[in-house]
Image (cartoon, rainbow, N blue to C red; front, top):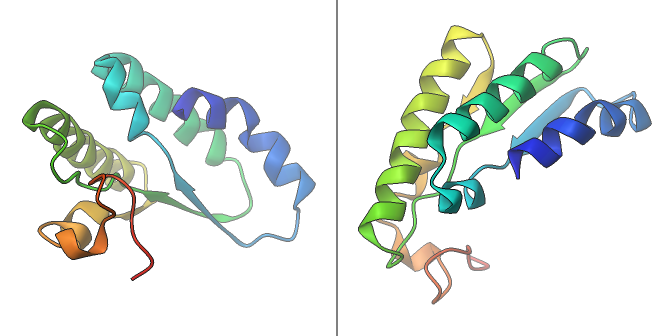
Amino acid sequence: MVSDISEKILEITAEHPTVKSLVIHTGALDVVKQQSEVLKRDFNDLLNKVRCLNTEVFISGPLPTVRRGAERFIRLLMLNRWLKDTCAAQSVNFIDNFNIFWERRHLFEADGFCLNKS
């Protein structure tokens, strides 16, 4: 959950002071709660915390789901769009996984959520 990462990120980075790049991949499970404004607030809190770090930060966007329902897909797509815009506005690197994995079902496990080894 984004709020969990936000609470722990400064502690985690303090334990690894030589890290030069940090990739944060979180948020996809948060969409199940159907609380978009809370999720946005949590991401803004996280972005504010990582801004003070002396490391290059990458926010890894959510993966599109396969066979997990239209509502979840739309929520993930909207989160992806919001994150992309928000990261750009705050000069934070964004990895657009949605476009990378869109319509590539062969890269997912049968559950349509987890990636397979390929």
